Length: 339
Image (cartoon, rainbow, N blue to C red; front, side, top):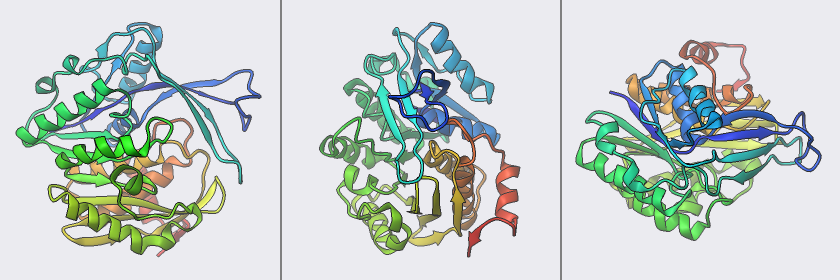
């Protein structure tokens, strides 16, 4: 039994310190992307995980492949083709200045792939877990088709599906996202929905857009989660991260989990973040780890939110923490938790 994640890995170019992209004369290079981040989280937690993507057969593509392989991810399903790796430029915010991301992923190896290149019968078997986020079908019509073919294969072969709705307004409109993600949701067993994801991707109201009062809106979040289960009866559980953000770096973080019609809430973590990229993917990795290890629902959501906030203290996309690291924070009386 393993987790298979499907999505694009990109070259990440970050401005030094807190420089804006317009000011930068050089960039720090690393690699990341939602599904790659989840795969590395699981590998760090010693769970069997494989990553499916397409990278160019050149030094940049090989470097990206080597980066995820370095942490223990199975890269044997990664395809080679195309001429360039997608890029995203990252400008870290500070205080009231928000973080900014600029995508340069058009004509990337992954976006130019055709659905017929992906052979799901080779990648997936009964008992596996398939993970994707809303970022992936936003890449191209062919990748949308590949996602839907993977989901159909999962339904026909008893494969559990986890989806992080993960809306990205810079990649597609809410109207397009809803048209695609509502179709995908017919196959999803566990849905992760945060902040604007509910309304932007499913047309379900749960959050008013005020990031300073996300936790204060927990009742509408819960209503939105219940509405997902009502509209998509195949979906058996929903998880969310709620935040009260005081500045870009400072905030309160809470996880909630709806499973078997019962809600489970984590403690609130009050944190100062070094870098917020990948925290949602770390949350997804923590949830998946809980499923793989048969944690009870309360331990699962506590573990997932702790993994998420630990990522806030780690640079670059990947959450380089072990299960022992996470459990130590969960058990500690010295951490800044509100119970």
